[in-house]
Length: 457
Image (tube, rainbow, N blue to C red; front, side):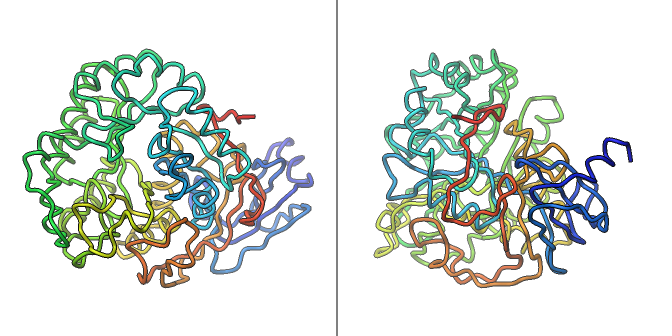
């Protein structure tokens, strides 16, 4: 240990957390973590007796992990706050161990397609967020001249659709518009994140009808995803721009994604808990809580997605939390053709993935990497995703063996509906810390983030 490290170890901290199981960059270790001014200052072997104003001793069954980073959340405020809002969404995030979210540019009104709309969203979010929040911009027909301004204002990148988004105020790009926007983004090294389903393939597919999930699944075929992903890959190849495939559900696409990465195309891929934990075969008649786009597919498809994660073709896991009001889910009729497509799961992601992963012999370290470090790296959140000196003191206290049954009435998101209600899960988040302070669900202490991590005033 250097003299500087000795000096730090002898210092007094705002917070010290001690435990036998702290997830460090070298794995689970017995450590003491010293925090000052919201930042990790020291990490020492357990027993060094770091002193602080507040000292937390982890229980024997608890692991300290970095706060999760969820780069795919639809908050919907302003404009559709009855669907979800910043207060309720960030409470749900905190309860699930998520300390940073990036908000999608839809389904709020106005959508985040220019700087004025971004300012409106920040003004609404400010003073009511319980975790740190950043914002994606949107790429729609006709706003290519707005992209650089949004980038300079701190947008983390740009989302587009290749088919109808579900809301009229956020129209899709055609492939040539996608390419033109990607050429623009390449000039300032931003990223295009793409909802990749091909509208032509879906137009020719059977129409969804009634309460039979199989009919809905047939209406969103894997081929629609595969075609759109191939289009994104080629436009990324031609432009040199960074591209990201949102919410991958089709395992058919994995070989071409793997090949594109091998070719050096600047491509990243995410998937979501619902594609990794649910299967089409188990969805009951009329259970529209399970409806999302692209859809939950068959069990065999799910197994291949897990393989894609393990071999690195899929980079990380995010929620795609996309709730709505109960009436929009058409619960009375259970008609998959008319119900809103979106799964509400922001609070449950870590438990969902850990429950599946441990059965597959995967470690907690691997799960946390997929849900914290890797999404943070993707978004350029350089102070997030690890427990290490210099990083934000964002932590979750996780009891990996603590089992529970999901009770939708106890979740924090605004509308009490989730396909996981009644599901038995392993692993419970007991406490979440943001910048070294325990989140109490009463006092909003979250910060608004710009690309590059500068805080918004």
